[in-house]
Amino acid sequence: MSLNKAIQYGKEHRKEYKGAKSIDSACRNNGSCDWCRENRLYKNLKRLDKANYTD
Image (cartoon, rainbow, N blue to C red; front, top):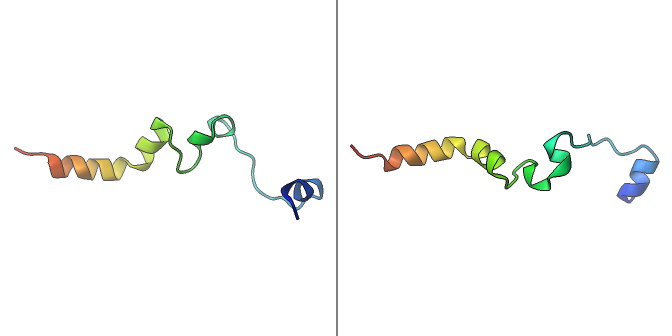
């Protein structure tokens, strides 16, 4: 069943994107916009900063 038919017959249960996600596909999960990338990689970036820190 194609996506259009699924929507037409009420078989589609995915939520619609809201806010910035509905406008910019780069801002969705695992997105490439700067804000999303920084939020997703925060822990790893902190770990790298700690590894590169020298007294």
